[in-house]
Length: 350
Ligand SMILES: Cc1cc2nc3c(=O)[nH]c(=O)nc-3n(C[C@H](O)[C@H](O)[C@H](O)COP(=O)(O)O)c2cc1C
Image (cartoon, rainbow, N blue to C red; front, side, top):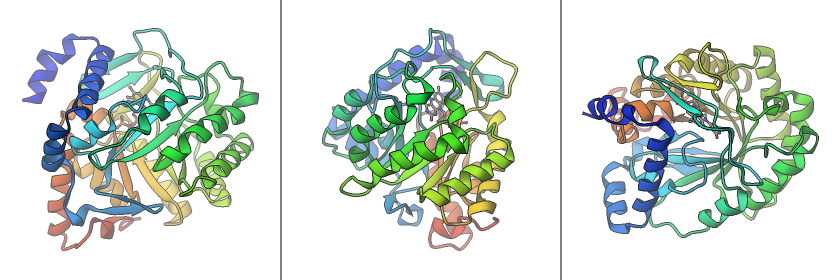
């Protein structure tokens, strides 16, 4: 049914226009407490066998929405009501910015993929903080993903990230330093350990100083060389980060300029996860994103060592209740394997 709606209706409209409308709809849902609670009751994961804990935070299930959909923290409750266990909002920058000129989001339906060059369009940290302070009536784990403001030069990047962290870390269930988006010039250079060490150290100081000590993760690109992946993993251990999110979109493709996500990213994303797991074992929480389409993909990531799994493109092609469906199927699979908890699957084949 959704496939029909997608091919016959949604695909006829500009991808970003559909995205904006969806965010507005989900934000509206947040203002309708009864409907929101009903949907949450029906679709959010409630099965105790699906619960996972990571860095001291309890998640009702492993599958969350990756960063980039709810860029301004406008609709996390609505997203949770559709079945995601957590929502990573952002990327948020210290200063609001318009992002790149449109069009900047493209569908590749035959490949079940997307290309985007959004460029961190967002209203800035203060606007997001105002929204994150609003009381919520359904439970949702909210991660906050921060990035560099475009006009800030690389030499001042640390101060820019720290400014965002000061505003947002106290309001986040976990904080993510994004150094891997391809659409802010120079951003991915920050993945080099010489630049990454001072950046992560400074942000960690801020995250550690919040009343609850906000867990801190770093999000990396799939295009890093294997040695660089190892170097970031070692650095994360050395500094005492809580985890790594792998991966962002890839620039290894021949289409429109921008980052490619969805099915073509699956293999590399899994490869990066396996490499990270081999390097760090269970000393860091690994969050796997990239090309997750169905319950088999989520299961495979868990077995390979991810505690949490995130999707974005899979949801666009899978329909609004994609995450609810996968969580339901995961619960069945857990029992079929004679497990009491999905946590027994984590790292099994690593
Ligand atoms: C339209 C779009 C916008 C995105 N924006 C961000 C972003 O702002 N920050 C970020 O860390 N990742 C962003 N991503 C990357 C996703 O969070 C995710 O890492 C990537 O898409 C791989 O997952 P997928 O294959 O399930 O889509 C974006 C992805 C898409 C498709």
